[in-house]
Image (cartoon, rainbow, N blue to C red):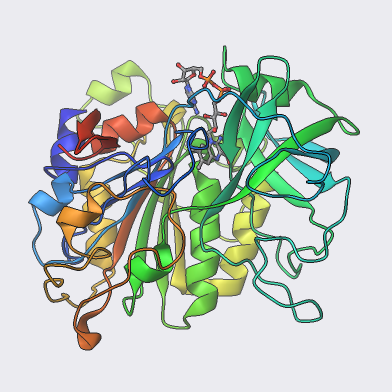
Length: 414
Ligand SMILES: Cc1cc2nc3c(=O)[nH]c(=O)nc-3n(C[C@H](O)[C@H](O)[C@H](O)COP(=O)(O)OP(=O)(O)OC[C@H]3O[C@@H](n4cnc5c(N)ncnc54)[C@H](O)[C@@H]3O)c2cc1C
């Protein structure tokens, strides 16, 4: 735990969904804060968090920037009653959707699809004009679901459309959710079957990946569990957007069934016993790169496989499994960062709110695209990114605890 935090650097900060950090050959870090002054009150849940400076930054070898997206715990928000006039997805009121499919991945996680009850030909998360191929407007975004019985809301991250499928103009969205024991919203969603009604509000743009990355092309993304949803969003946006972009996904999961079903049949590394861990002749299990095709792929595994088929070596996927004692450690993160062999970037402009670390630290995880314009030299715009996303405990492990910084609760800042 301490080791991980040291590895990440000296500072970090909480983002509602992610945190930012520096990578080795990627310079200093960028960070995001959880609450943006520009945001309306009551809208910011807090599962994904971002950290500003990080241990990685502290150890900066060559400046490069890293963004860490974090998924954190959820805050409770009292919800406004939806107006009858707001029938399509919007940022102010909750609108009804219907669950159209539900697929279990493990005993506690599942993917489900929702369709709006009032179709909207131009949802706010689509960039294309009607008639053009549809594309998502933001590299990273989420919507809120509400739990009507106890009046709370939580953010969830739509999964990118499956390979070969356009974002659907009928507004259909898919989500990967884990039911947390005792969790108000996630257990509520876990109980709902096909045909049940859910209520959504959004679109909520996330950390402005495009501006932060600028002319740089490398992202390392450490995702814990359902934190893979934002990772897949960012991977698709970055890899579709730039033919020379490279994305390394480090996916930390509790058990292999998130990636592969029937793992014992298909060659899962043997679980490490306590005895194994301490036997010098049996070194500690290590995270491994995912083979393609993925044997007995889970529904999520099939989606990763499709992305891998599309992007080839530009997308590398590594998995660390709790049950197999192959968690990601500092050395794995550094190896992934350094393997990108990104050219060092120059220091950012002192007043650049996108790339200077002092502004990055208190930045919000929820920020409108372009809200923080880059003022760096034209030939030095952007930072390679290291992003972290996952449950609060996961983020704390890698980015450090939540702290208050400049009146904003952040994570990864110290
Ligand atoms: C921008 C954003 C996007 C998100 N996208 C997704 C997504 O795509 N899929 C998804 O499943 N979640 C996502 N989340 C997290 C989600 O919003 C909720 O926080 C989560 O589902 C838990 O809510 P809850 O009401 O069930 O638990 P709560 O009642 O809020 O929490 C109950 C307890 O469980 C702990 N806890 C919360 N989450 C976890 C966890 N993952 N593991 C272990 N303990 C936990 C809390 O700290 C608390 O102690 C996202 C969060 C944000 C901010």
